[in-house]
Image (cartoon, rainbow, N blue to C red; front, top):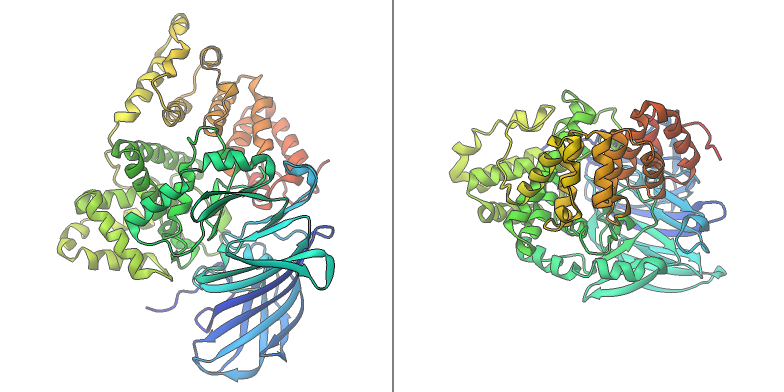
Length: 616
């Protein structure tokens, strides 16, 4: 198959490809920079290679060598989200099959989009600074000059020098630590990642970290204030790992650790190999939100082992991972639970399509990202439209056991490589060669390349959803005189997952303010410790124009930085005309502590110039 050029990368991976990275960093909290060098071992894929291009973003490049000979380099024009190409002229020509080690010494910028530097006040412990990275989708280039495309996979080795009162961890196996011979106030931590992986999965965290063992191959890491809570919340990790192994084959990454980040982390979780990142919003106290960990565990196969070749094929990572996550739920809970989660996912998809607009090409399962920042395309579409397609195929092909056979075989077939939708589809037709006539009836163009909702709405089992629908109907049909009939006991038969679904349903047709106030009286959602419940509840309050809820909604939107909660809460307050200016003021006041990705997206949501200086 012809090589696919990644529209989000300057690196021409068809000419040469990175096989290994050797990283050496010193972490400077005062200047908020990483200084160091990277040695890239590159394999040449075409004859007469005399130059190559690496992706960078706001990096200061000091020198470049190729096999220890000085190499001339130039920096191309800066692009708003793709960064700056680093063009390297090799001091010699190379032939296909040869390898070259290109070493770059450099420094990151304090504004590197991959890195968030937290002051001690922004941490739970309040005593030490904290650093964490988030490289997905194309932010690794602001941390490392590299071929920053998921099409390229490599191993890596790293050593990181940090202040000795802090601990460093990375998305790799820990490989010991020792004093820094250059600086007695620093310690060097070493890491090795022997399994090839794309650049977006390189991750680093430095902070006052502690860990607890939660299984034979798992630890939780966080500041001491969260570590015991996290150990309780994620105690089912080994069961989930074993369940996934039974479904799709051995876990190849060795260690599976979970690191609970400070609240400004913008995602629910991030599947960095050997070290899943998790938001503290998962610490509900009753393990009810640990299905996010089942999702990140599933990525160990779908995403990390088999990877989308470009971000246009992101659904290959996320649709399969949601499918596998729900299969883990099926084994650990029930088939009805899987069906119930699928119903909620369809609603999330509907909300994303409504937010983007039903004709927006970013709601295609396979969108074009030419001149599109992949962060702007991020939504539940690849997750839930992707899952809906796989579930539809499962029904056509003969049920979950039959289709899981395909998923396992697909993972074995493409393990350690990066692929496109066409390659996936071709393998689907090969695997189900006796059912090609059925596959040919699928409207592939409508599923893949048409915006809006999918062409087929799967029929899910509503057993667990029915109770939520009944309670929702009682509230939406209730007159003022009926409000006294509602009791706290209404929620007793419902699991927390069902309460979340009930609120999702209510959100689709907001209630009169009198009803919302009565709901607070009987159910006391304001005091919920479950962030999924609280965020939906506060959105409902603001939608119903309950003015007292506005400060609470903005408090939740700024106390944590998970995009799933912060963006909808801000948007809801912004849409409440009377409080529009307050939403903008709060954003400006808090954006200095927000993650760079969040600042960029919220600036667009609230129509604020993201380049303006932060208001104190």
